[in-house]
Amino acid sequence: MSAPPPFPLPRSLSSGAPQPGDRVIVGLSGGVDSAVSALLLRDQGYDVVGVFMKNWEDDEECTAREDLVDAASVADQLGIEIEAVNFSAEYQQRVFSYFLAEYQAGRTPNPDILCNTEIKFKAFLDHAFSLGADWVATGHYARARRQDGRTELLRGLDPNKDQSYFLHRLSQPQIARVLFPVGELPKPEVRALAHKAGLAVAAKRDSTGICFIGERPFREFLGRYLTGEPGPMRTPEGKLVGQHQGLMFHTIGQRQGLGIGGAGEAWYVAGKDMTNNVLIVVQGHDHPALLRQQVELIDCQWIAGQVPVGAGLSARLRYRQQDLSCTVTSTGPAALTLHFDTPQWAVTPGQFGVLYCKEVCLGGGVIA
Figure 1 (cartoon, rainbow, N blue to C red):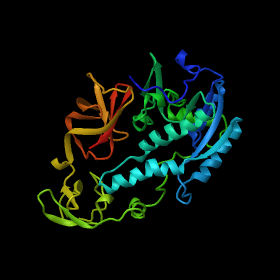
Figure 2 (cartoon, rainbow, N blue to C red):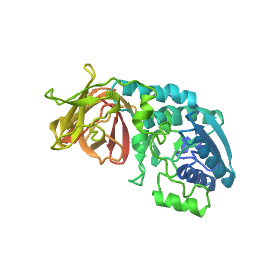
Figure 3 (cartoon, helix red, strand yellow):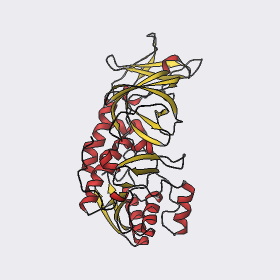
Figure 4 (tube, rainbow, N blue to C red):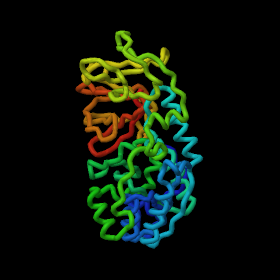
């Protein structure tokens, strides 16, 4: 049995759907997706309030100031209130510290997933409900389906924008209170609605990458916080082929920036020997060392609160990847093994494997 939610359920949840007049607090990011989410909710008769979240203090490398101005402009155009909330301390403690620790351990984390779990759907939710929200809403391309007292996370209908992968660690108490207004729409239609309403962000470019890195080269950014220890680059057979400047600067499948000369096929990162500080590299995109037919997931979280069972499951090992048919062997409530029909290329420890049953996102775990 799942734990009860840590806050009162909205008055409309018993009907299976939110009702006009409910108070909805929207995370306004300064982008077009959240702006249109607020527009749709306002036009459907909800009591809409915007909240802008600031999650990083280094404004020189992050667009927080410009985004706040854009979010405030949208709120003014829509005639709704907006509040700016600073979650930088929570972000540093819950997300950025994890990001650094994972790289220090030789893995490649995905901080956007942890940001959703710990900030946008935890710190933000807590704040929204303290303001009397019945529901919260974001501009994610995903859907929530409520039935039989539970909530399922569904893919966004636009396959090019589906963001369910980034939301797979949400729990029932978190997802039960969330609305995804643009999850039913293709991105071009969202843009068209913004233009029709004359929203200031209608033509604004989508944000890409991680806010706290900004436009800097990744190695330069990481070097500000972690010290790389140089070491050898070797083949799986032990042949020395070069030197690396720190294992943390490399990820599985990496081709660029290795600096290995000579003739023949391109070189790729195939592994890391953390004990001996050795970067393992191979020649050729299809080298066996880059392929894995089964993948272990640890620290698993399941939206329904239980390990998925049954046939017809598929997985993604990275965002925007095609669904991969697989079978699942459970090794415990928080660990399982995915078995694939064909070997998978450059499976990366620290990234997330996410399970689906058709349109339903079931949850997932960290690739071991």
